[in-house]
Length: 280
Image (cartoon, rainbow, N blue to C red; front, side, top):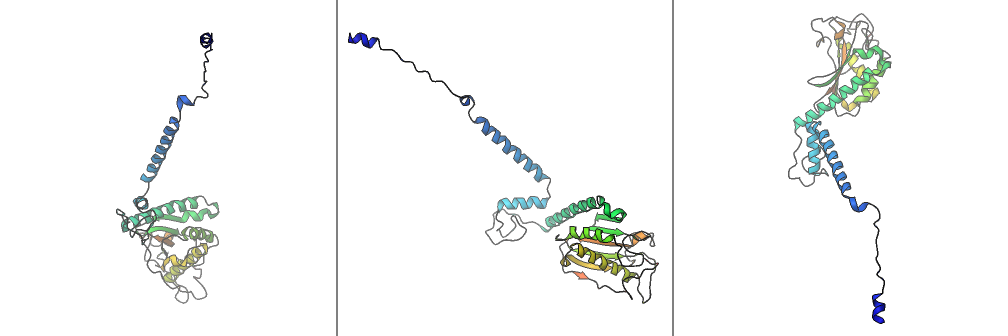
């Protein structure tokens, strides 16, 4: 009897159901997606780097070699530090610094040209402004016509609308690491008023007037290296020495680092700056 009851004991079968679908895929796709995003980020970083100047590339390389910038050579700063020297840090050469400065001037040139072209309040004045790169740096030329665009004929008194133009330049040049040279020029037309006030005095006074307007726009006094007048000794159009385009004021941002500033004294005219007349 006991053996029969043991044989009649029911057999229990337990079936476990699987929940969800994670068992088929797992988390491998997340790892693959993360790798893909990392690769794309690296690609975009490389594409950005190849478009930069050699000076910026050198600075970035120095940063990864010396992130804190404490090396005695150059790390992430162009200033020397007092920490331990990284083994393979390469200092920035004078040529690379010069290239970097010229790159910044080219960027400024494009920005100024864009602002001049999109400033309706300047009107025809902007058409008489030339912004170009020279061997000295970025030169801004304010070129007169026969009627006088920036100054009255024979006068160093700026016309009313000129102040807005100089304010634009002054705000753009303010706090930039470039010395500024301001120069005045006349044509070859002899001009002399009572008291011997002539082309030399007129060109010098116009340069000083331009400097003062730039200062009102934000140009720092420490940025000014030179203010001078050249009369008709540096003609824009030597083949036509009497052409009004020779009458101009130039503002040059110098590409080389600035030594001490030099400002020629303004020469006041009898009874005021540059009396209006029929001269340059």
